[in-house]
Image (tube, rainbow, N blue to C red):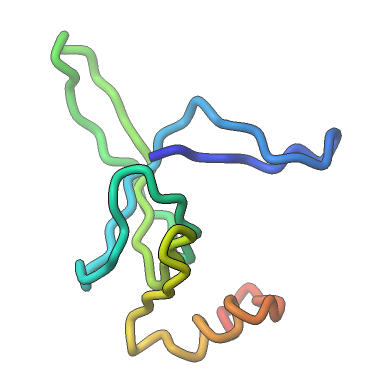
Length: 99
């Protein structure tokens, strides 16, 4: 997954060398290879394993609660998090406790 990070010095998004595994439990989306997506979710402990050369590698994991497929322009969200999704969609600031 392509990850872009905001660079406040240039006021641009830059491509990161990081990878991010995103888990979306619903699984029913239009997201496909080559689509750009925006994701709202919770970062959890890194997934750690071994690569094909036997070296230990890790990647952050995000549990997604909402996705926006920029190609199809269609949003997806988990019904239990609809209020949080609507705040995210409208750009309303989110507080530390998620309200």
